[in-house]
Image 1 (cartoon, rainbow, N blue to C red):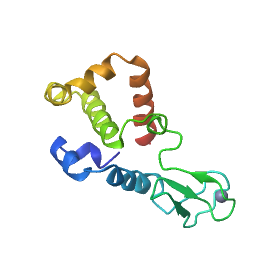
Image 2: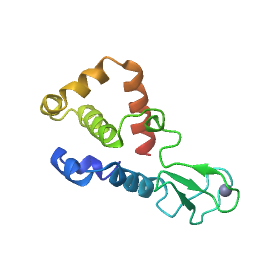
Image 3: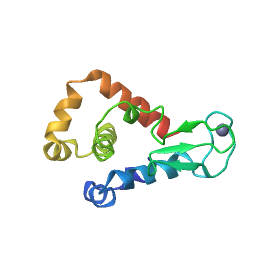
Image 4: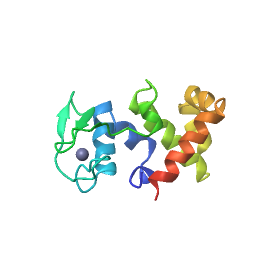
Length: 131
Ligand SMILES: [Zn+2]
């Protein structure tokens, strides 16, 4: 999340007001040159199923989602919350203003703190995003 790193928490709030906005962002990040099928590798506009949540390759019919293979795919947590959590984790990693964020997101922070597994998964995801 190169751009998100430069965002303030307020900007994050304002930009990602809906899960759709999050999906759009992830789509652009995941497929900057257009949708690339994870199965056959063809770059082509996919069929769009169920309002942006699922994409189907026109060539091999493989269905995939923008969150496939990430922790966001495995939970029912709204994407907006993941974005906030990831923002929090990445800010914390850089050592800036973790306490301010912690206050604002106290509940989530507590949840994350008490879940080493989730932190590990978030860290992995952050790593793969920064490559
Ligand atoms: Zn395909």
